[in-house]
Length: 118
Image 1 (tube, helix red, strand yellow):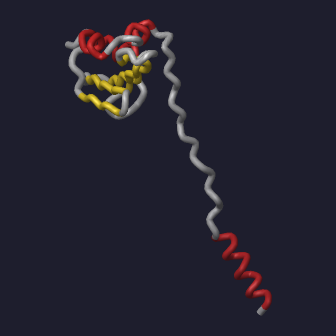
Image 2 (cartoon, helix red, strand yellow):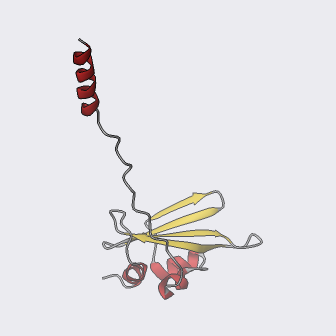
Image 3 (cartoon, rainbow, N blue to C red):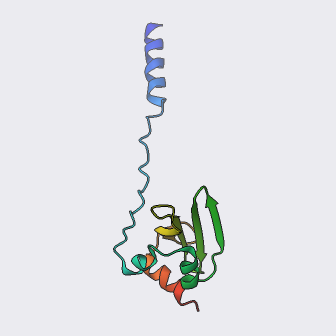
């Protein structure tokens, strides 16, 4: 009987699922402001940005910040505006681009597509 219990225990232990290793999630590529196209947008006010890229398709105000979203068939650009020092006007401090499916895309190409719509 002991052999049966021991054999059963070993068989059941072998059937137990091995612990799964966590799947490594791809890390987003940090966006640097070294691209000339991105630098052109940094520091613009909302009015200047709209004059440069056209009317945004989406706008969110959260506290004292503003997010403007511009879209083309090719990409989505989010511009984040925060107040400048001393309570001045909101200015673009960060730009993020992606495809409509959420995949990172070339910022220069996205900005160019928004500047020169077909």
